[in-house]
Image (cartoon, rainbow, N blue to C red):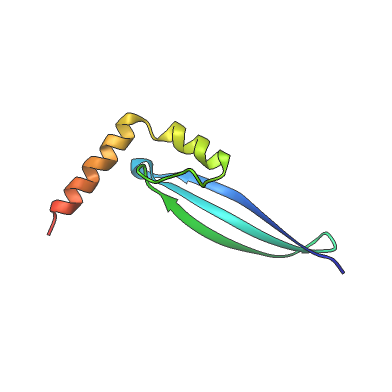
Amino acid sequence: MALTEKIEIDRIEVVDMGIIQVRQATIIERDGQFVSRTFHRWVLNPDSDISGQEQKVKDIANAAWTPEVCQAYETFKATQRMTP
């Protein structure tokens, strides 16, 4: 009986203000047959450091984070700091 574990980013979504939601799946198989799947999720904002991300996440971030999107996100952050 051989157990194998495969980890892959299976979902990348760009939502409001260029925020990127990433889902990573961990898939366990026994002798090539599916056993289980678990997920880990994280969020990247337009001001996030993406240097440690997989290339496909970087590619999407670089496409989505236009100067206009980054400016809109910075404006949003500034208005949130002013709100009591």
